[in-house]
Structure formats: C-alpha cells, structure tokens
Image 1 (cartoon, rainbow, N blue to C red):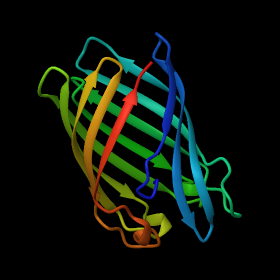
Image 2 (cartoon, rainbow, N blue to C red; image 1 turned 180 degrees about the vertical axis):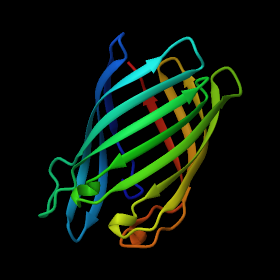
Image 3 (spheres, one colour; image 1 turned 60 degrees about the vertical axis):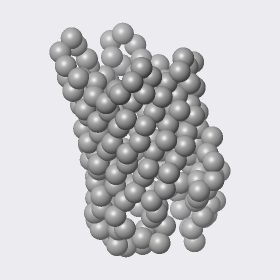
Image 4 (cartoon, rainbow, N blue to C red; image 1 turned 30 degrees about the horizontal axis):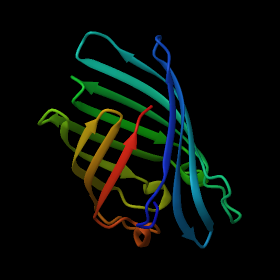
Length: 189
C-alpha cells in the first residue's frame, strides 16, 4: 500500500494476564484514487486471547481502520472482526468479516492459513495462503499467498518475503498488487 516505496510502521500493544489486549498500529501508505488521497493508516484494536497449556490458542479481535488526513469526500474508515486459532504455535487460521468495507456499506470476508517452521537457531521459514471475498463491492474473490524467511537477533527481526495474488475482476483490478519481494526490519521493545 506504499506504491513500492519504503513504509514506516509503528505498533503499541498491551496484553493483560486475563487475555484481554488493546493496541494501535500505524503505517505510512501512498494510495491515490479519483476519490482522494491516503498517506497514513492508523488502526486501533481490542480483543481477547485465550491460551492454555494445550496446543491450541484462540483470539477474537475488533479493529477500527482509520486514515487520518485523507482527502476527498469519501471516508474509507471501517470496522472488522477477526477470529483466529493457532495450533502448536506453528499453524494458524484466521477469519475476518466487515459489513462496511472501506466505508462503502458492503460486506467483505477473508480467510488465511499460515505456518512457520524453525530451521536454525534464529531462523524461521513461513508461508501463507488466503482469500479475499469482496463480491458485494463488485470485486471477484481472489487468492493471495506469501513465502519467506525471518531471523530474530535480540530485539531485531529481519524478514524477506515474496507476496503474490490472483488478479481480481472489478474496480480494484487496476490497483491490485503485483508479485513482489518485501524486506523488513522490525524492533520490539
């Protein structure tokens, strides 16, 4: 969503011992359309994470996507509900639902399965496959996938990942992402 340019992203999370969590995430973006310009995405979320000594954990999250400073007459802001489950901290599945995608009063759903495998001391390889269903907005359902490797050294994580997707039909087809490699460096405090 940064039009191929580097993006700066910041996140702040807090999770209580009870499993309740709250957080915010922000990223620079570069989206221009006839309906206006968006340069920043700021998301807020709250949820509940359940884990036990069993190999399965689950989470329910309510998110609010916002775009401070967006131009144009249309507001792209909307809410989404996510339900996720993880098995053995290695395999996960996520389902998402909104009834107001990009403020257009249309339903959208997505799912994604992801797996990660440790291969060396600090190295992990991973892959994901997902689907977006935005047919209510005039966009055909389409698959997306990624594969990559990451390494964590102390507080820094380095990630190299290849992303790709089917080309959807509808108004978003001209703006869909092409396959690309993404390099990221993140720090946790």
